[in-house]
Structures are given as C-alpha cells and as structure tokens.
Image 1 (tube, rainbow, N blue to C red):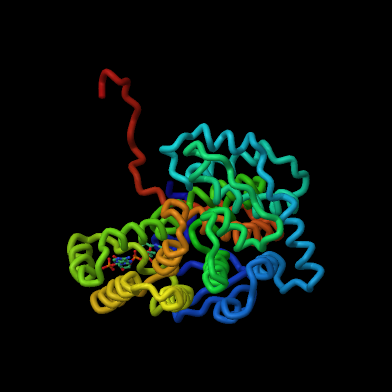
Image 2 (cartoon, rainbow, N blue to C red):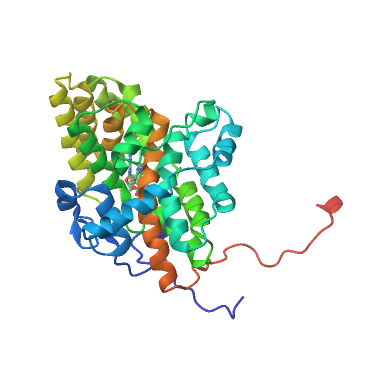
Length: 373
Ligand SMILES: CC(C)(COP(=O)(O)OP(=O)(O)OC[C@H]1O[C@@H](n2cnc3c(N)ncnc32)[C@H](O)[C@@H]1OP(=O)(O)O)[C@@H](O)C(=O)NCCC(=O)NCCS
C-alpha cells in the first residue's frame, strides 16, 4: 500500500471539478447558459428545435439546404420496428415509461441495421422521440402512435404525445422547453454518456446508460416528481406550510436547486413567463401559476434556493395535457441530441475515463472458512 502514488483528491460528487474541455455548452452560477456560444435567451427568442439540434451537434447553425438534409435524415429514420414495440409491450402496464423507453433504446442496439456511427446517431435521435411518445401507451396494450413526417420535430412529438390540437403559442412554448432540455454541459447523464463513449461502446449503449442516469429524481426524474408535488399541494395557500414541513423534515423540495445555478436558472425564468402567458391567453384561472410562485417565494425566503427548469417545465407539460409519467421521457427525447454531441466530442479526442478511488478499508484481514466466522 505504501508504494501507491498520492491520488489527486476531488470533492464529493465532483462538484466544481472540470473533467474535460468542451465546445458544446457552458452554464455558470450567475445564470449564464450558452450553446456553442449562443445565449439561451437568444435561442429561446429566435431558434427552432431542428436548427438548434444541428448547432449543438455540429458547432454552427445550418444553411437552408443543410437544415433540410438534416431534417430529412431524422424523418427517414423515425419508423420503429414492430419488434421493438413488442419488447415494450411485453413489459406490461406496470412498467414505468422511462424504464420502457430505456429497454426499447437498449434493444435498438440489436435491432437497428445502421452501419455507420452517423446513421446510428440519426436513428437514435429520431426514434427516441417516437419511443418517448409510445413508452406509456404501448406497455399498457395500446397501439403505437406513428410520427407525422409533415410536421416539425416539436409539433410531431407533442401531437404523438397528446393527440390534441394546440394553439400556435402553446406549440411554440413546447418547442422552447425542448430546446432548454437539449443540452447542459456536464450533467449526470451526459457525463455517463461520455464515460460509456470513452470505452468506444456504440451510441445505443451510451444512450441507454444516459437514460439510466436521467431517471433519478435528482436529475431528469425531477420534472415528474415536481408535478406530483404541485398536484399534492394544490392550493397556493398551502405552499408555505408544505415547504416549512419539508425543510423541517430534512426533505429536498424537488424542482429546486442546481449544482451550477445558484442565483437563478435562466430556463426556469423563461418557462415561468411562458406558464403565465399560456394561462393568460387561455383566460384560465391562474392558480397553478400562483402555486408555483408561492413555493418559489417560500424557498427563496427560507433557503435562497431558486427553482430549476424541471420545476417550471412540469406545469407547462401539465397544461399541454401530457401525462405526468411522460415528462422525463420528453426530457430524454431532446437531450439525446446533446448526448450525441458529447459522444462525438469524447471519441474525437478520446481517453478512457477511468478514475481512481482512495481505498479506506482494512488491509490486514485473513480468510476464515464459513464455519469459523
Ligand atoms: C440538484 C441538486 C441535486 C444539486 O445538488 P448539490 O449541488 O449537490 O447541492 P446539495 O444537494 O449539496 O445542496 C446544498 C444545500 O442546499 C440544500 N438543498 C439543495 N437543493 C434543495 C432542495 N431542492 N430542497 C431543499 N434543500 C435543498 C441541501 O440540503 C444543502 O443544504 P445544507 O448545506 O444545509 O446541507 C439538489 O439541489 C437537489 O437535490 N434538488 C432537488 C432535485 C431536483 O430538482 N433536481 C433537478 C436538478 S436540475
């Protein structure tokens, strides 16, 4: 043991540790978020989903023809084999949609016939949204819903998810939320994807691992949990009591806090505006907005902890009529583009990600047969 070189010790959870250089995106404590150098507010105000996906993947916005070709590549790979839906169906109605999605994506590794890494990535990016839209209905025995090749990515996904017509503004908002979910530097699932990519495993394996990391309530699972919390609290007048009790009991209030953003999450701020605007345009009672706002104020007063994207994406999805267990799969449908950008960046300048650990267990124990223990 004495010959082991001194390890470089890093903080728990790798907090504040830069593990790689990246040109894809950056987020900072003061609420800055850039995709390939573009501020998220600029993208939110002006960009479409497909062109942002191209930007994240390739480093610059596409020209008209590039965008058309990119969109066509995605569309042509959207159809999912019956065999894959069959695997989802076999899981049965007790399967959580995110588990069904992960299982289906894993099965693409054996069912997809793409030869090239590019082809595999297009296939994943495209099928992920079709599988996300079907990962609740198919395990419950319903027929798969098919993509509509005439529609853009976000409209198509929303329509597959809900089968409802939505106003221009609501569809625009859904596209913004997808853009916000697309990429976020070294979050837990992206790091996971990069670890798997560093072994030179294929994109299906990396995305399956990314989905596993995304599931947890401290990461992607937070949007579903946040909505359940909002539904449980129900009334703005009950917000203060709920937060007080949760904090007293040492519980996390899901949808609050972030490893990077300490003042505000720029995506949450924008989503909060959209939420208010959807209700105003519908002329509906704004109780859901007031509830969100009341919890936010209480968390800020008591802990100085701001809401994150998941907290305000959840009530937007709710107003759009999307079933709550589908919130994390939607996150995945968009984040796949970010995952693939990181997969490529990793393999282009690869080194196996294989950290070390400082052993703190005993070293002088001797084996004893079971009858002597
Ligand atoms: C996202 C998250 C994991 C970031 O965690 P982190 O950077 O490791 O920060 P910590 O969990 O160490 O939190 C720092 C402090 O803030 C508190 N805190 C952070 N998020 C909190 C929350 N949502 N509710 C209550 N307290 C919270 C912690 O209890 C801790 O307090 P302490 O210093 O008194 O022990 C954390 O904020 C969290 O669990 N949030 C809820 C889940 C969620 O919304 N996830 C989606 C993230 S986008």
